[in-house]
Length: 110
Image: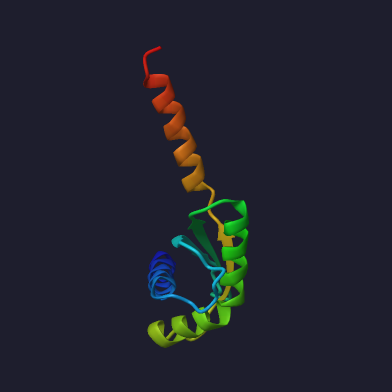
């Protein structure tokens, strides 16, 4: 499953980096893919540069483009079954930045 998840992440990252026609999709990074054991569903974790509105618009644009992205997965990977994609915002990047800010503020002498 790890190899499948990594392959899907690479294909999706490359296709999104090439650009999609939807103008709502901003600077998006695919951080991980979690595929169900039966390969019918995949949660695509993404981080988005920007505020909450830009994040929501990018997620809506990605969900709208899921058919194009699924077709790209089928074309590149030759999988018997391509999973249905669900895009989810990955909060781990935001949490990591917040932890880093806290550590930096604690390290500064007063």
